Length: 127
View (cartoon, rainbow, N blue to C red):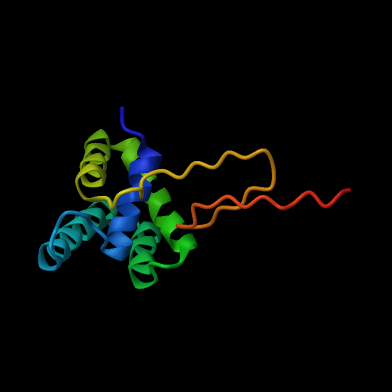
């Protein structure tokens, strides 16, 4: 069973930023371009999803755009098992280490944003 949400987030990161692990620069650019083309083909004439891909590529640091792309990928993956398997393969093979899942559990007042994996707890000021 494929964790569609996790692999969609990982592939969104790859497609938007071009970040892949284990490949030289020229090979990585080729892989990323093929992934983007395949995603575009799956999205087809769905202009909202195509726009999400294009916007994420143009501004990969924008977390909102990355979430939109991941949501579009997940939507299509839930409806097409073969595409879900493709996403899983890309995530497994190319995702940078630590890019697939972010879990935060804290007693209270946890803050986590983007790639910041620190949990900062406000000091108890009620004395």
